[in-house]
Length: 351
Image (cartoon, rainbow, N blue to C red; front, side, top):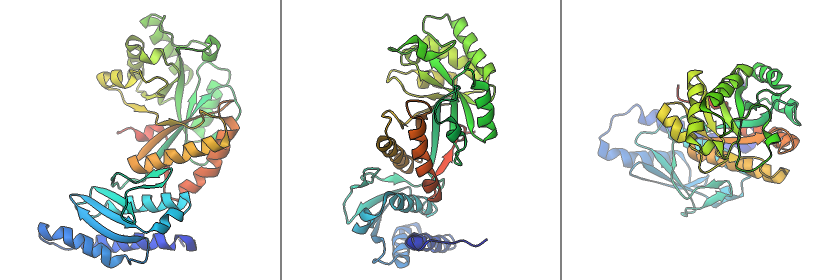
C-alpha cells in the first residue's frame, strides 16, 4: 500500500515520526528512575527542532509542557485539531506521562474558540471518539435519506409506533448504524400531539409505563438502547424512570439521557439499577441555521479531543433536517481524515 501525504501535513508527520523514535529509544533502555525525567525531556528536544512547531519542552509530576510557536494560532481549525490530537495520542506511549499542558509562547490560552488549552489534557492511546445521535426518525422526515447514507457512523433514534418506524430501523441497521428507541416522554410544557402514540406520562401507572416500554422494544427490535424524546417532566420522576429502566435492563438496553431537564434522574436511577447510562454533551441544532450548527459541531470536536469522547444530538425534520445534514456532510469526512473517530453509542459502553 502506498501512503500519499499532502505537503501541508509534512510538519505533522515530522512530529509523529520524531516521537516514534523517542518511544523506540526509551522502551529499549534501562535507566534509574531519578534520571528518567531529565532523559525524557532531553530526548524529545533532540528529536524536535526549535524552529518547528514546538518551541520548548518541560516536565513536572506527570505533566509534559509543550510550548507551541505562535504560528499555530494561524492554522485553520482542522489543522489545529489534527496537531493537538496527534500529539495527545502519540505522547501516550511515553513513560511517566499522564497529561500534556499546551502553551502558546509560554501562555495558557485558547488556541481557538473550539480548543481551550488552559488546562492539562489527559493523554490517551484511543483516538478522540464522537457519537452523533440523530433524533426524530420514524416519519421519513426531511433529511432522513441523507442521514441514512452518511459514510461515517451515527446512531439513529427512532420514534416507536410511527408509520415508518420499523422500515427506518431496518434501513439504519443495514447501513451499519446503531439504532435506539427515541422514547416519547412527558415534558413540562408542550402539546400532547408532539409525543405521538403511547408516550410515557407521569399520570400512568407503573404497570402501564412498563407495558408501553415493552411495546416500544417490540416495535423496534433492532434497538440497543433508548433516549428520551422531550421528557423534561418524566425524566425528573423517579418512579417513572425506575419503571422504564427496569424494562430496559431486562431487555439488555442501554440508556442515553438527552438531558432535556437539569433535574433528570436517569443517571441516578441507572446507577442504582446497574444499567449503563451515558449523557448527551450538546445539541447540534437548537438553532436551525447552518452557522450555529457548524459551530456546535466544532465545539463537540473540541470536547472530544479534551475529554476523549463526546456525544452530540441532531435531528431530522424541521429542527435540523437538511441543514444539519449539510453540515455533517461537510465536516465529518474532513474530521475523519484527521483522526477523529465516529462511533455508535454502543461503542462508548465498557463491555
